[in-house]
Amino acid sequence: MDETQDQSVHRKIAKNVSLLSLSVGLTMVIGLALRMLLPRIMGPEKMGIFYFADSFTTAFFAFLPLGFTTYINRTVPSNHGHVRDIFDTIVLMELLMAALIGLAMFASLMIFKRDAGWETWGTVMIMGIYAATFNFQRNILHKIFIAIDKVRLVSIINVVVKIVLVAGCLVIFKFHPTILLVAIMHALSEIFGLFYMMREARRHQFFGEGFSRERLRELLKVSLPFYMAGVLTTFFTETDTNMLSFMSSDIEVGYFGSANKLIGVFLLLIPILQSSFTPALSQALHEGAGNFGKLYKQLMNLLLVFSLPLSVVLILFGDYISRLLYGDGFQASYKIVCFLTPVLTMMYINTFTGACLYLSSPGGQISRIFIIGLIINVALDMVAIPIGLKFGPGGAGVAVTFCTFICEVYTFLAMTRIFPTQVLDLKLFKNMLVILAPCWLGMLFYEPMVALNFWERLAIAALAPFYALLTRLVTMAEIKAFSRLVRSTLTS
View 1 (tube, rainbow, N blue to C red):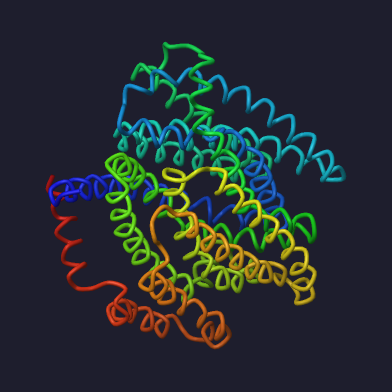
View 2 (cartoon, rainbow, N blue to C red; view 1 turned 90 degrees about the horizontal axis):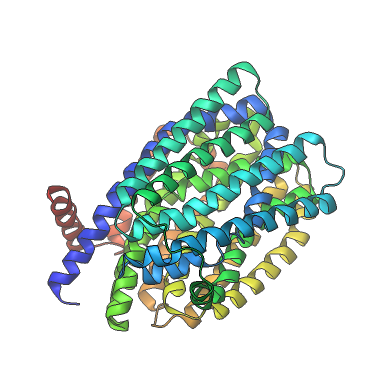
């Protein structure tokens, strides 16, 4: 990859990051009202029901994409016309899978939550519709449009769907606030987005080839090895919430769920960076392993730099942000937020590394990593949750944060062993410690830290840029190069 190509790839990535960042920023601002009002109106117990419904259905509908996302990311960026060849086959298979998953979810609910009230049952089933439409859009439709350089379209739709959701929920809060109606509004907003995306798909002439068994075999041949890896990734993410629901109470799920959702807000860069990086990484892989490895190292370093301010803000101001969003009724979740912060860094690293492995490595190896990780996570949760419950409200949530971090570290170490190029070198290990060190200090001195006032914490946060320079997480030369790239991108 010569210097001209290098700059072109970086400029394309920067443009995609800018558009998707603007989209995510707008959706966050629009959704802030919902994040603040929903917990305050419903309280920890009702939110526990909602978080369980969200987590339970997310785990089931992780099976929906059939691994097609990997096929799309590998083939479409270098051949846009291929979308028409595969689109009808993908859509029909997704419809069939959605029906089968819905039946399996209903049966599982009968087994694990037979004694649950009608509100829990109704909320879970409606959130199932939401999960199905959400997964189909994010993992199939959005990936296709991003792969053909229609990032602006995806960004606009994300914002519009969030506006529909928040507006509908505000009406519900005014006239008849119930968790079931909130779930219905979630489903309706995604259905609106689905209809719009399918209309755009027709306008771009994605339809027309019809269902093809040959195409299906071609799709599955590439996708199936990564299918279980994708499913297990989601199961891995949702294990803690589901285990808490089965082993504790709705209130404990509410405390942990609120902290976990806040971590989710700080993970906002993951979908932005993953969607922006994937087409460039796919093209670099087609050009040669050397180009792929070089680009991976550049982007990993950028990812670590971005994650530092997010971790510092979450450690120092997590309780302020939680109080602002959820109110004093969720005070037991503040400590959980702090103890989840090291997980934030590991999730950034693992998501990016996993996305690169989906492009460059056999899916069976990735699946084995997540199977072992899932077993470790469940085993640790079974031991940690009863211990955590002895420490009062929120104790179980704090306990599972340690389990999650251990599993994330295992996942990273296991993935580095199958990565096509050398990843875990001294520089990466040092940079990871640079980012994790403030998190561990915040956990160790949690009580003295929360006793500090806002301005004292702000003074500590202001030291973060100097800390990054002192530890050489980033250099002045890299900052100047990044500034030139941003100016070039904005000008173009």
